[in-house]
Amino acid sequence: MSRVAHATRSSRVGLVLIGAAALALAAAPAWGDRLTLRLLAEMFTFVALASLWNLLAGYAGLVSVGQQAFVGLGGYLLFALAMFAGIHPIVAILIAGAVSAVVAVPVAALIFRLRGAYFAIGTWVVAEVFRLLASQVSALGGGSGISLPAAVVLAMAPSRTMRELEIYWLALGLMAIVLAAIVALLRSRHGLALTAVRDNEVAAQSNGIDVWRLKFAVYVLTAVGTGMVGALIFLMKLRISPDTAFSVNDWTACVIFIVVIGGIGRIEGPIIGTIVFFLMRQTLADLGSVYLLMLGAVAIGVMLWAPKGLWGVVAERFGWQALPLQRRLVIAPADKHH
Amino acid sequence: MLWLNVILQGVLTGGLYAMFAAGLSLIFGVMRLVNIAHGDLIVLAAYVALMATTALGVNPLVSLIVVVPAMALIGYALQRGLLNRTLGEDLLPPLLVTFGLSIIIQNGLLELFTADSRKLQAGAIEVATMQVTQGLWIGVLPLLQFAVAVGVIAGLQLLFYRTALGRAFRATSDDPAVAQLMGLDTRHVFALAMALSLAVVAIAGVFLAVRSNFDPAIGPARLIFGFEAVIIGGLGNLWGTLAGGVILGVSQAIGAQIDPGWQLLAGHIAFLVILALRPQGLFPKVSG
Image 1 (cartoon, chains in turn orange, brown):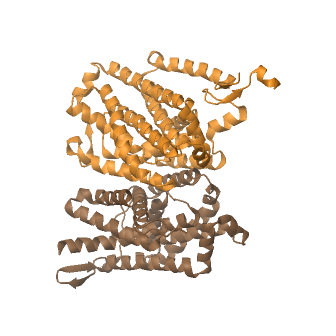
Image 2 (cartoon, helix red, strand yellow):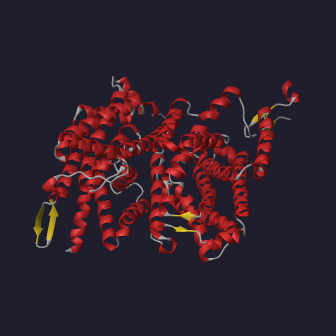
Image 3 (cartoon, chains in turn green, orange):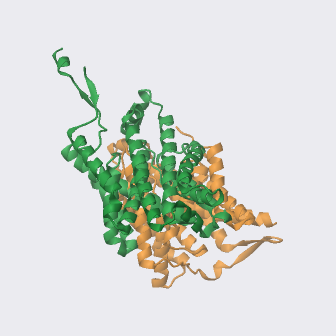
């Protein structure tokens, strides 16, 4: 019997390496200091955001420049739920994901009327509307923003160290969930449909895939993940304002550059991209705006000369894949003699 | 009379938005390129005008003689050197490259000119007004801006349908491969379209800089206004973009009159309502 195989030798090696990395990261509080943990937690949120954007743009072909809408929505929901309903922040993160889904449905219904690049700017308009609405809510600090009350922070864990550990594992856990969900989705029947849409939308449609519904579902799912990550980001920051929550530079420009540099349309891309992004940031951040300028230039260079990104170059050169996502037909020996 | 005045101001501001939109619409029409850096290029034009007025000591409106060709040249070079490489079936490369360009222009301007707010001084014309009827006054500068917008759109319309260059634009838009077979150098035609787009951007940038404060970060919002005007008016229709700009300007003016915090929100809501009710825009081009 012939069968479809996902795994290759490199993906088996990849899984072992990923398992080892996951263990090392879970045990990071044992080997890393406070600053390292904080940096790692921030990296986890960027890996999650970038992976979600990669799913949206790289697989579903929905190039959004407005994902900050859901980062900010999640952040503000966390603050509102914790401050006015006394809900524990971890529960609030889950609720933020659910509410993001509910909000994403009418948003998608509206902006899916725009095609291609106009869709991109449409998502940006939605994010601007969210930002302007948030600055109208005076109970949440209006335009100047608000800090998370000390009582809410103290309710999480009594000591600062415990709180920091809690947030670190929360970030690691959320990233792991987002990545696992994306891998599971891509390995499923829908993932095959999604890859078909990525490669050729018209051909996918003619093979019976309901492209509109598939894209709609991916948009809503991405909003859920982005909303939850947004809630976590502002739990880590402890302060929120419309301009930071709905920042196109922080939550979209940097995220897009991460995915493009790492490799769009590949699950490994956002992880590689985040590592490169943080390496650059740690060494060049003193340059201020010149740093962002260079980041933009690097992203343009990669887009023009290596459009599949760093991981794309590696994967094509050596045929590697870190996760078992490929589909190969394995022909059993008995079938060969027909 | 108050509301009549508010609406009139909105209409005149709409002229500026129509100029933002015309440049965007033009290059989308010719090469299906949506330029995310469009707003930042408008701001760049404002800074070029700032340098020109300081260096030459002329009125900003006179500086257009320098700023328009300078921006057109930048447009031609940008298209030939960078953007032509991104065009193709895949819409991701042009989108991401212009997005990167937007970040580069913003941060480059920030580095050169700091985040301080600037404004161009146009002298007496800024405060000159004319009385329309009892209790209704109209600013000379806003009126001039609107008249220029109408002139720009009429000029583009003439160029598109009455000249050889316009024919080349339309041919390339319909089918670049066949246009190339007929002896058109599409790379050159695309670069001319971008040059023309940035010439319009230059005019819009100077009026923006005379009418209000500007700083390196305001580009994206101008892109969004232009984009909204394009979609409200209907893709591919130049006079439609003027109508779209006016509707956006009036919505913002009415919103601002109700509550200053609602100015931008009212414009976005008008856009979203039209998108919900008439996604093809108010005056779509008849598709052939």
